[in-house]
Image (tube, rainbow over all chains, first blue to last red; front, side):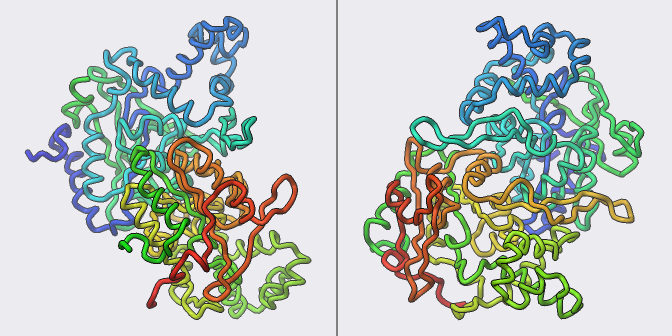
Amino acid sequence: MSDLLPSWRPGPVRDAVVGFLDAVHDVEPDDRLACFDNDGTLWCERPTYVQLDYLVDLLRAASSEDPAVRERPEYAAVLDGDRAAIGDLGLVRVALALTELCQGWGPEEFTDSVRDFMGRAQHPTLGRPHRTAVYQPMLELLDELRARDVTVSIVSGGGTEFVRAISRDLYGVAPELVVGTLVAYDYDRDPDGRPRLRRTASVVGEANEGAAKVSAIQTHLGRRPQLAAGNSGGDREMLEWADGQDGPSLALLVDHDDADREVAYTSVAQTFAEAEPITQVGDRLGWTVVSMARDWSRVFPDGA
Amino acid sequence: MSDLLPSWRPGPVRDAVVGFLDAVHDVEPDDRLACFDNDGTLWCERPTYVQLDYLVDLLRAASSEDPAVRERPEYAAVLDGDRAAIGDLGLVRVALALTELCQGWGPEEFTDSVRDFMGRAQHPTLGRPHRTAVYQPMLELLDELRARDVTVSIVSGGGTEFVRAISRDLYGVAPELVVGTLVAYDYDRDPDGRPRLRRTASVVGEANEGAAKVSAIQTHLGRRPQLAAGNSGGDREMLEWADGQDGPSLALLVDHDDADREVAYTSVAQTFAEAEPITQVGDRLGWTVVSMARDWSRVFPDGA
């Protein structure tokens, strides 16, 4: 076996990926673009999104400084890990309340805070730091794409600035190549008259999921990708967008079927108002469905 | 004299630019960012914006195919060059009507149409194609910045996709590094069920001018620039944003004072509800104000 993609086991899936790496030479270099979802595609998203862990960490710190924080029902439910209460309040309401924890912060303050968390946070079940719960086979693929002058971007449902805070370090992806859910900024001037930007608690437009990912790829990156990789119903439209064109393309879907080394679960996609497992959608549409258990010889990087 | 910036005449302005090129080595390479306005900063914006010329060209073609196009008062005013009628209708209304000419188009169709226009359009007074009415000294500066690992972006009040159609060719700037005024896309499926994006006639958010440029730099590019270059009141906040930070910075303002080689005019900035010439704002705030007549030995590239 060659040195190419060493953590991908031989088989039809690896063949399809290698076939794309060969075929992409037929695409004009300036047009080459690959879009990767982040949660569950580049790093582990279970048992909770890393961004949620970060916000809960912030909330715990705020609450230990000022116990009155608990008086807000959304915060009490999160601090108590009370899933029933969170369900009653509604996840969106709870998420927006957590976003308010960073309201008024400047972009650098937020980035520093995320990096501080990521420097110390442990994954709750995998026995490794969050920052190393990234998929080694995908890191190898990102490198091989860049070696072929493919622009590698992250198109995430998570917060744009959250992902940017770690994207260069974990994936080698520059901030302008991260497209996610955007929190709006307020522009004003500080008491000395200098301009400043401060985070609000409002999302610009809508969450970056489903068809919104397709529009965001065009408005942010300005071209159509030849490769899209995802793992959930929110990635469906993006994978179809990469797939449904002339010329080389690859729609890559990660199937989380490896309970031993990661977590076993399946996301669903809304298809004609019915929920359909996303892996079934992938099989039906002819995508390349990656079985973590079968196709990856290694899931996470060695060492720390 | 060295080979550095050959079209910049020796003097304090060139010294400031060269000083910045030296000092930017003190900035972390990953953080290095320069933001250039387009109209009037990288290419000629008079007597009309090139994008407006493009839309008028589209309108003329539509009108010769179907004379009924003239029945719409906004279109009749533009076709007749009737400035009074345009003023009565309002420029925003006329501009939105022109944007409707491309409604329903896919991104590639729009890009092809702009490139077709730019391949043949002549500047009305300079005696050269539009695509060569770009400022040679700025092209030299873009190259020197990139040679120092500075990410070079365009932050324009013009349409994002319009500028992207020519940014790689004219300036070497990739589409993901173009930030402008965005027309929203509709996502749907064609009769065969394949996903598609089509242009609407609505702007996402607001026009990319003034404080909106500062927010857009952060949301799109994810960091603060060390250099911002502009020429009009709509660039003021962006220049202050680059200028008002610790470490190396350069706020570069182009003063159009060269009636012989280009056009002489001055934009104004709204300052505390009063209109102030932008060059006066620049002098007051200590920006580097470039006199085209004095500081540039050459304005446009040689040859065609």
